[in-house]
Image 1 (tube, rainbow, N blue to C red):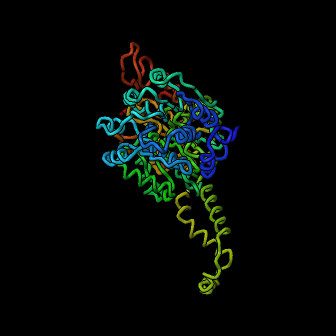
Image 2 (image 1 turned 135 degrees about the horizontal axis):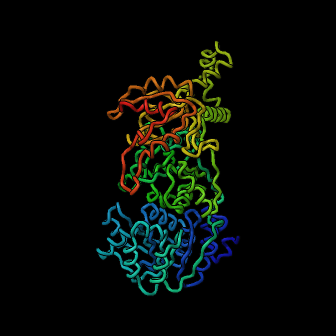
Image 3 (image 1 turned 90 degrees about the vertical axis):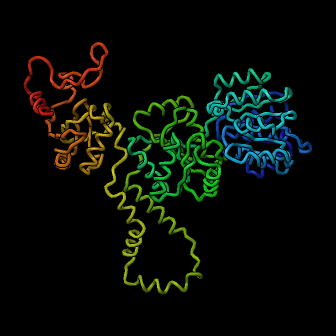
Length: 583
């Protein structure tokens, strides 16, 4: 790897980036900067989030613009307000000690009249979102005659967000003598069409998968049932006491819901999504940058452009639909050479995505177990004792208070003081985690492939509820646990049928489950619970009575047929037939 000195950067810029803490160029900077500085040509660069792409185009941009000319010389397009503001801040930092430029960000959700005033006062570089720039163009508030450089940052994301027509209109409005620098994480056909239509023989640079992967990020995943995702999140936060994290959700509704749940439970968290006003977004991001927020719960789009130092964890509460989004999310941590951890909470059905990510990116993802209740309590106690040992004691300031403390604690032995101190700090936590279930009950190698529940060697119960009652395995498990009060880990394999089901339960809970569910009315049906024999398997009965649901011979829906045609057999089926009489 070369040094920044070898890239052709000016002495003033070298001093500036040295003060910013940059030591060596990243692979994309090493490839892009010399070309953009030395050659007058277009460029297409493939670079993931977190690989230093802003410096890759920002340093040459500042070097090529002239502080003596007040007209607009460069335009940078970015998909979101956050990224727009982040690029503006970075360009201002790069220009310190070189030449001070007027860099004006324009984006939706803020006063357009104020942005017009700033442009009219002089905007040598404009950083804009496509939608707001189109608004300014309609008002004839921007002039492109003097623009020499156009940068498209996160080009694939702008296309994903539906800005294709806006980008076409903007690029078509640029003067003929301009250079286009296009930076993208991926190279879909739409990007190639833009290059073909508006760029002149562009230089293409990219880094390999191995180079694009941030080696300072440790990638982990845990398998958890959908209904336990929030509890799993809290376990991770409680275990990692010094966590400073971004938590990703798939939708704006989920983002707001999770943030509100965390706040109600006493955690220092807030939400960032597209439904917030600009004032709200600025307040949330300001709190997060100042670390008055421990956790930022965000959507993929809203989190674009977040460049906050010292983020320790990225948590994927839901896996993204696109593999590239996983890389973008994870890139929020391990910035500027620091280390970070990316943890994905996945259902058993989503484990295939883990393999896809590993194959596509070259990332190695390590499966972890979620901490148990006792492990959380132990970890918190260890951290507290460490803080106790490391605390700075200013004896002169507390000297006058100590006699009263000594007198009050005199009747207690050292062991009693330690026990009372521990109880004072941990009674609430111990109460919360007392009897808490092991959230790793799903997906272990000993699980049965058919359902994913932890197998419990215990009693097998029959219940006259199934798919026709609108139940799936998760809902049936919730019904059993809610009615009986037993924990989910006490329930074993669930065999869900059309009009009935079987489930296993630890023998110590059998009587309790039968007592609380038998005779209970569910959606107009009286629930019946019966203990079956160990050898009475659901699949054998299903074969005798036909599929519990689905299509008939010619593809038309058919009703459940609890009784088969023909002569009734004896044995286990007599027991089963007796149970469904009177339904």
